[in-house]
Length: 69
Image 1: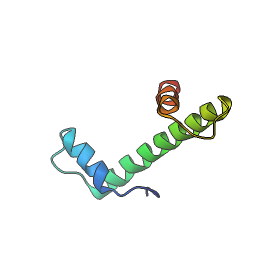
Image 2 (image 1 turned 120 degrees about the vertical axis):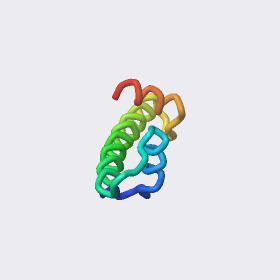
Image 3 (image 1 turned 30 degrees about the vertical axis):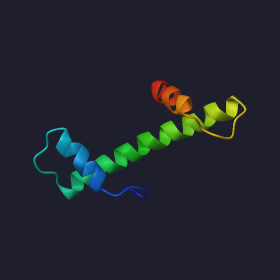
């Protein structure tokens, strides 16, 4: 189960994508998958900021990390 996020936003995303109904299991799996991807991007963004000599992650780091992942 997703450790950091509520399931409600993921349900909204799936419904916005066209789902009429979403099972709890599907929500949990979707949240887990998205949490893993978000963590990968965050980790890469932190490395990019560190490489640039900064302690602060900026929007450009997030965009670059997203492209790299």
